[in-house]
Image (cartoon, rainbow over all chains, first blue to last red; front, side, top):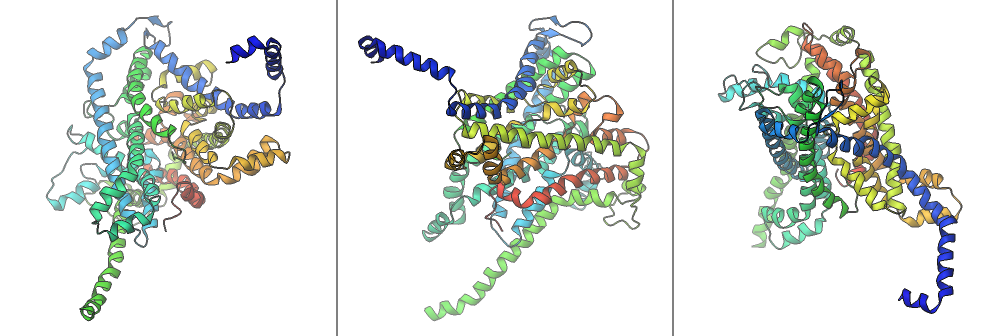
Amino acid sequence: MSGKASALLPSDARACSASAARRFWRFDFRDRIRAWGFGFVLPTVVFFAVFKYGPMLWALELSFTSYDMVSQPRFVGLDNYRDLLADPIFRETLVNTLVYIGGSTVLITLVALALALAINTRVPGARHCMMAMFLTNLMPIIAVCLVWRFLLHPHGLISQLLHPLGFDRVDWLTSSWTAMPCIIFVTVWRFAPYFMVVFIAGLLAIPDDYYEAAHLDGASPLQRFWYITLPLLTPMVFFVVVVSALLSARIFLMPFIITGGGPGNATRVLSMLIYETGFSYLKMGRAAAISAVLFAIMMIFTFLQMRFYMGREEAYIR
Amino acid sequence: MTELRTAIIPPTRLIRRSRPLLGSIALAGLAFAFIVPILWMTTTSFQAGEKMFQLTTEWIPSVWHPENYPNALSRAAFGRYFLNSGVVSFAVMTGNLVFCTLAGYGLAKFHFPCARLILLLILSTLMLPLEVTLVPTFLVIHKFGWLNSYQGIIGPLLVDAFGVFLMRQAIVSIPSDYLEAARIDGAGELRILWQIVLPQCKPALAVLAVFSFRDSWDQFLWPLTVVSVDRMRTYPLGLVQFGDDYGNPPTEQMAIAVLATVPVFLLFAVLQRAFTRGFGLSGLR
């Protein structure tokens, strides 16, 4: 169509390109507004280029080298990755990380949903209870870890509470069967109230009319939950699952403080291994290769989350 | 039949009326169970050192020991550590408020080329937390010569992708007509941002302020990596060192933990109203 038009009227085409050129050189007010918009975004773009994408590419490059910060990086091809696969500690750490992500994601989601439903009964004082529970999410993580290390001590508060129920002294943090569940428990205690708030926001957005209509039709509370609440809450559940998975994939401080990765390697996770390999043993190349593995895990969840984010326009949180 | 029903109603109503009360009590119990560790931390910080190792927890100290606080502060340079943490957290919070708002506004209301691609790329950095890019980010800071400095600790934390997204979503819902009208009236772009956009996203700003402050106040791994001298330590590093040093009573460690909790709770208390609106919880009472 445009080809035909320019063939018929060459002078027009020239005029067109001339105006395009003029438009290119002249900065009309619309362009000026656009330039402002780009200017607003620019500092952030530069930041992410320097502190996120630059390091990401550098990490990929480093993962093919052997580098100790003293001598020059030496290219070793896939050796770092091959060594990792053969390393039983790395495999154990990877399994721990996946178990931790799975366990805490599922439990955080279930606990947060249960708490949100409890608050959403809107009994008097529900709001204050919500605020109180949310405090666990604001307490500094280091304080959380230190307090729980004492509470889970064989003579600590948890053992004292369980004693009347017939439990003997349990070495919560030093036996390989209970250490990881304990870390997951503390994680849920710390993060579930945050996701509870997200769920409450979702529950409040469901119009009361739906429930009233269902009530008139004789739906039981369970049916109302199953056929109204859950379908309308599905996007929120998706958000909570993905964000808590991302949070738990990068966990460092809880195992580092509460168990120190032990007993043995039972609670060692990938981020701890990255830190130790890079900064205790100065094997930067190998640490970068472990980072690449953690990155791959996070990428899966991020893509899931992106699909969620880009489809929605309302404000979402955290 | 009708008479019978009316006769039955009063007791039913009584049960119905007492139900919320039972619910309130149950919920309050649950909330209490959640904050037990916070209460334990607080009372333990006033406890005598040797009471920590008793077999039963003494909930209310028989003798209060408020001197745990000055003792703990004098055993290590906690004043300096808290100052460092304060400087870092305040800078990170300010940086997030400024840059996330600017970027969120730019991405929400301006149609320049690649805007959507930029948004995607920013959101993608959620898969690149410091834990993943630890080694190369350390090398970048090393190249800049920023090891053991405030700019070194603050730099990589200054903007958070979640914050950009949060602010974008808050600003998208402001009608563009307002901005156009202001432009026609001759307002500059910065003035529009300051006088029209900002007042309307106060709740989102409150959420962003609380979370960015909390996250940088909590930050452990990054200062651990980038700081190697005592004078630049933030309080979490100092607190862990304090626990590792032989002979420091755990009660004093709890005292420092309480002091560390106060600023976050205070900030939350100040911003609570806007914060709940930012979360969409205004309907709950």
